[in-house]
Image (cartoon, rainbow, N blue to C red; front, side, top):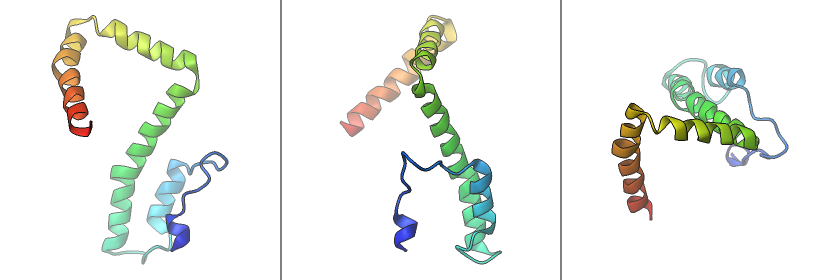
Length: 105
């Protein structure tokens, strides 16, 4: 049980690939080969684990190099001057950010 809850060394171990995560969800010994628990594990893998892992790795890749994030920020800033993106920023992102800050701070 302790091994289940202990995080891997984040700075020294390579994270599992998407294929390894899928294989674990489908065939690992955490439950029987079929049944509700296995279906829940596979569903969790496809609906939560893989999308969040991909998003986190893309986010991480952007912040690994200063040039990458500078380019992304410049493109976002330039796009904010266009009509659809400017409207989205003013009417969706700013209110959502204010609501989140009000809620959490």
